[in-house]
Amino acid sequence: MSKYLFPLNYKYKPKLLGIIDYSYLVPILIFVSIIGIILYINQVDFFISFGIVIIITLPPLLLLSTGINGQPAIPFLVALLKFHYSTKIYIYKK
Picture (cartoon, rainbow, N blue to C red):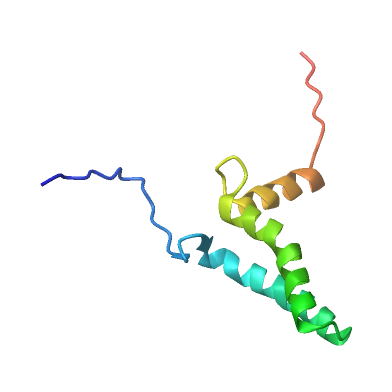
Protein backbone atom coordinates (compact mmCIF):
# COMPACT_ATOMS: atom_id res chain seq x y z
CA MET A 1 0.00 0.00 0.00
CA SER A 2 1.38 3.42 -0.96
CA LYS A 3 1.45 6.39 1.36
CA TYR A 4 0.90 9.86 0.02
CA LEU A 5 2.45 12.77 1.88
CA PHE A 6 0.85 16.16 1.51
CA PRO A 7 2.78 19.29 2.47
CA LEU A 8 1.57 21.24 5.49
CA ASN A 9 0.85 24.35 3.43
CA TYR A 10 -1.46 22.46 1.04
CA LYS A 11 -4.91 24.02 1.02
CA TYR A 12 -7.91 22.29 -0.49
CA LYS A 13 -10.62 24.52 -1.93
CA PRO A 14 -13.96 22.99 -2.87
CA LYS A 15 -14.95 23.83 -6.43
CA LEU A 16 -18.09 23.58 -8.55
CA LEU A 17 -17.56 20.72 -11.02
CA GLY A 18 -13.87 20.81 -10.05
CA ILE A 19 -13.28 24.03 -12.02
CA ILE A 20 -14.90 27.13 -10.45
CA ASP A 21 -14.27 28.26 -6.88
CA TYR A 22 -17.44 28.92 -4.95
CA SER A 23 -16.11 32.36 -3.96
CA TYR A 24 -15.96 33.32 -7.66
CA LEU A 25 -19.39 31.90 -8.43
CA VAL A 26 -21.32 34.86 -6.97
CA PRO A 27 -19.69 37.55 -9.21
CA ILE A 28 -20.15 35.30 -12.23
CA LEU A 29 -23.84 34.78 -11.44
CA ILE A 30 -24.36 38.52 -10.95
CA PHE A 31 -22.66 39.23 -14.28
CA VAL A 32 -24.72 36.60 -16.11
CA SER A 33 -27.98 37.79 -14.53
CA ILE A 34 -27.34 41.41 -15.55
CA ILE A 35 -26.68 40.33 -19.14
CA GLY A 36 -29.76 38.08 -19.07
CA ILE A 37 -31.98 40.90 -17.80
CA ILE A 38 -30.71 43.26 -20.50
CA LEU A 39 -31.37 40.67 -23.20
CA TYR A 40 -34.83 39.89 -21.75
CA ILE A 41 -35.79 43.57 -21.74
CA ASN A 42 -34.71 43.88 -25.38
CA GLN A 43 -36.85 40.79 -26.22
CA VAL A 44 -34.07 38.78 -27.82
CA ASP A 45 -34.91 35.19 -28.76
CA PHE A 46 -33.98 32.64 -26.07
CA PHE A 47 -31.48 30.65 -28.13
CA ILE A 48 -29.77 33.76 -29.46
CA SER A 49 -29.57 35.25 -25.97
CA PHE A 50 -28.19 31.95 -24.63
CA GLY A 51 -25.43 32.08 -27.25
CA ILE A 52 -24.67 35.72 -26.45
CA VAL A 53 -24.45 34.97 -22.72
CA ILE A 54 -22.03 32.10 -23.37
CA ILE A 55 -19.84 34.19 -25.69
CA ILE A 56 -19.71 37.13 -23.28
CA THR A 57 -19.23 35.19 -20.02
CA LEU A 58 -16.79 32.49 -21.16
CA PRO A 59 -13.61 34.68 -21.16
CA PRO A 60 -14.18 36.07 -17.62
CA LEU A 61 -15.11 32.58 -16.43
CA LEU A 62 -11.87 31.14 -17.78
CA LEU A 63 -9.86 34.03 -16.32
CA LEU A 64 -11.41 33.55 -12.88
CA SER A 65 -10.99 29.79 -12.91
CA THR A 66 -7.36 29.65 -14.07
CA GLY A 67 -5.98 32.89 -12.65
CA ILE A 68 -3.07 34.99 -13.84
CA ASN A 69 0.37 33.34 -13.67
CA GLY A 70 -0.96 30.83 -11.15
CA GLN A 71 -2.26 33.54 -8.82
CA PRO A 72 -6.03 33.87 -8.27
CA ALA A 73 -7.53 36.51 -10.57
CA ILE A 74 -9.63 38.60 -8.15
CA PRO A 75 -6.87 39.28 -5.57
CA PHE A 76 -4.51 40.06 -8.46
CA LEU A 77 -6.93 42.57 -9.97
CA VAL A 78 -7.62 44.17 -6.56
CA ALA A 79 -3.88 44.59 -5.95
CA LEU A 80 -3.46 46.02 -9.45
CA LEU A 81 -6.24 48.58 -8.88
CA LYS A 82 -4.87 49.56 -5.45
CA PHE A 83 -1.44 50.09 -7.01
CA HIS A 84 -2.91 52.15 -9.85
CA TYR A 85 -4.84 54.48 -7.56
CA SER A 86 -2.22 54.87 -4.86
CA THR A 87 1.03 55.09 -6.79
CA LYS A 88 3.55 57.50 -5.35
CA ILE A 89 6.91 58.54 -6.68
CA TYR A 90 9.64 58.63 -4.10
CA ILE A 91 12.90 60.42 -4.73
CA TYR A 92 15.76 59.36 -2.55
CA LYS A 93 18.70 61.70 -2.19
CA LYS A 94 21.86 60.67 -0.43
